[in-house]
Amino acid sequence: MQDHPNNKNAVARPVTVLGAGAWGTAVAIALAQRHAVRLWGRDTAAMQAMAADGENKHYLPGFPFPAGLAVEPDFDAALAHAAGPDGLLIAACPVAGLRPLLEQLKTRAIGNLVWLCKGFEYGTGLLPHQIVRQVLGDTVPAGALSGPSFAQEVARGLPCALTIASDSAPLREAVVSAVHGGNIRVYGSTDLVGVEVGGAVKNILAIATGVADGLGLGLNARAALITRGLAEITRLGTRLGGQVETFMGLTGMGDLILTCTGDLSRNRRVGLGLSQDKPLDQIVQELGHVAEGVPCAKAVRELAGKLGVDMPITNAVAGVLFDGVPPKAMVARLLARDPRDEKIAPASPN
Ligand SMILES: NC(=O)C1=CN([C@@H]2O[C@H](COP(=O)(O)OP(=O)(O)OC[C@H]3O[C@@H](n4cnc5c(N)ncnc54)[C@H](O)[C@@H]3O)[C@@H](O)[C@H]2O)C=CC1
Ligand SMILES: O=C(CO)COP(=O)(O)O
Image (cartoon, rainbow, N blue to C red; front, side, top):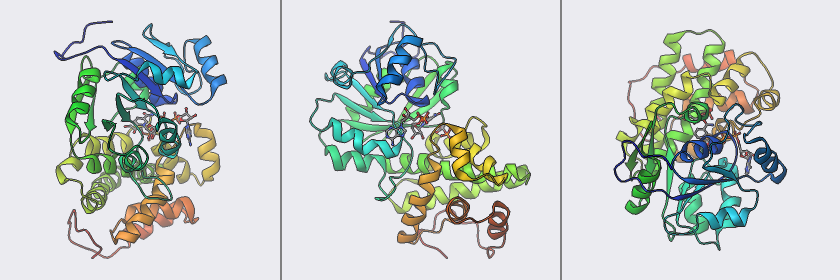
């Protein structure tokens, strides 16, 4: 174990990461500098290949595993590693995989549970913390770790700042003590709704910005989309009970700026592909990773429609993704909307 610079409360903990995509692997690599980490993924053959290669060649190539990181293809053994009260269990799957994963955890001992996924569940319109409560109840200390954080940069050890959102003060303290330090800063929040709405909706707005940039609409248009996108996040988020200040923070504005402007973003790359009139299936296949903004656009369009929350950019993105609206027509429709005051958060359309 190395020292824990910048974290006087650091405690070495057994950590298990469930989900071996780009983000789960990057988090496992980063935490393995200070903790004994087990990395599990649902594809046993892929996990065996990862163990042999000492690297996740499919989802995060070029980042050899450090000594503190062990691949664990066996689910029970992976859970047992972090089952004690000091243990940290990190669910690193996409939103679509969270409920099935939690179902597998229902009868198991869990010390502390953290999830990393960003989105609303399609079909139910639930946020991840609501899925966790539905499946596991309130008995497990649990929270969402979110914020502007491209996997490749975290795996390289570059600086980043994250937020742990949870109702449980001991959980927040456990995550800060485990993750804060060195080049990672971790802030605490009790606003689970605000943190999760920001992380979910920014992915849809990154698709919109990718479309605009791909069409060559310029930096003014990009800034306008990001700013009015933040208004959409805030409008939906406050309607669901989130706090305005959360949307101005790391998991709101911070992650929105990163994902809309950084070419490492998969969601932004979906938008760039759409701007070239590529079919969505082809874009997703070429990407080889999840782009949460795609299912999320459908989920948020439905949810906002039910709640009467005005989300024109989200609706425009969903129109391109699912209704065959050409990207140029999407932009024309947005520009053709009636003028209005620059309000951020009226909860209903006006
Ligand atoms: N990559 C990044 O930089 C960051 C990603 N996230 C979030 O973390 C979550 C996971 O993203 P990545 O690991 O980057 O995705 P990825 O596409 O690199 O990997 C996805 C992983 O989940 C598995 N998977 C795919 N569909 C699944 C399903 N329906 N059920 C269970 N497992 C499934 C795949 O086998 C793979 O191991 C997403 O919600 C993403 O928004 C959050 C912060 C940063
Ligand atoms: O959430 C992310 C960065 O914070 C990753 O965004 P993408 O899924 O668009 O790559």
